[in-house]
Length: 436
Image (cartoon, rainbow, N blue to C red; front, side):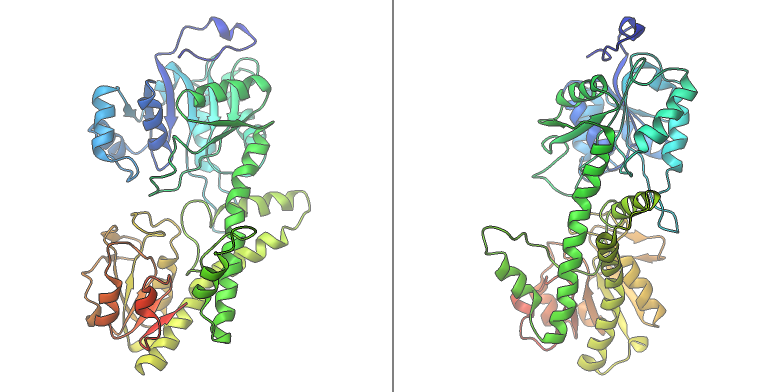
């Protein structure tokens, strides 16, 4: 499909050599490239990591959600390719930005990666192109931050010479039921024509597109989705801590409440939040709210509860060792089972397991980890060890990967601290199993 028409001389521009250029070949960019390539669009991925680019061009996937055999077919049969050269953007009909937007050490939005890329894009921008930001951020980023940079660097006007929109990524790594293709795509442009252009583009490859009135509405939509989860997880985490004092099994309570067919949505307690969205997204909104002299007290409270969970779990582990094995944490060998932030993936971004390992080491424990999906964690200086439960004073289940025989684990281990209810019935009524 050629570049979307605009209200100016942009309509006379030559059709693009590339339909879609995606800036960022990560957890968002590669699945996006897959769906567009499978829909028959010509796609190029742009990334600053030369090794990653070389891997993609060899058909070797860097993302679990897009297997290498799928990527290799798209590279060989559909012409999907990757590059480090920003000049490729000159020949693209649409430029999708899927770059990290992390938090600073002060828990404030850090847009440096995004804005740096925007400056590079601006010098290559030409009339008739569509630019869409997919990176999670606070309301106003597209219009107040991205738009001025694109206009200043290109000499073009957004809405007149090129289209500009925001469409939040909704990737949940490891899922096969809901993917980039069948999760509805929310789109909001800086004007009606930009919204329509973005909706046409995504509609050519994604099953359903939902348009909103502005990029600000689309930006806040993404934050609401994950803040909803953050708040409800905080609620059940707080309940889990109360249940410990009351001597009630929180897992039994959650399971029972989930039988109600209306008015209740089940969330499970755990050792904290992980991933690239849920632990981070609330801070985008609380930061933006302070700009307009508004305190998001409910959201900030949920953040405090969830951030405290690794510390609570460290105390629970210490208590279990003391009372269950008669050992001090500082004299114990502890195996952390699962270092990824969620089951059956290799993603360790913001994983609560990292903080738990750090806290256990800080208390003097000798800590190892086993994770069938994560061979090594360089920031911890650790590599995954074989699963030999009997070799440790305690096994702490932080991530409940499938494929682990938890009943056998309970049999072999001297002590199990189960933070995910992975042991299920095998851990119920067993003195050597402590549950969150």
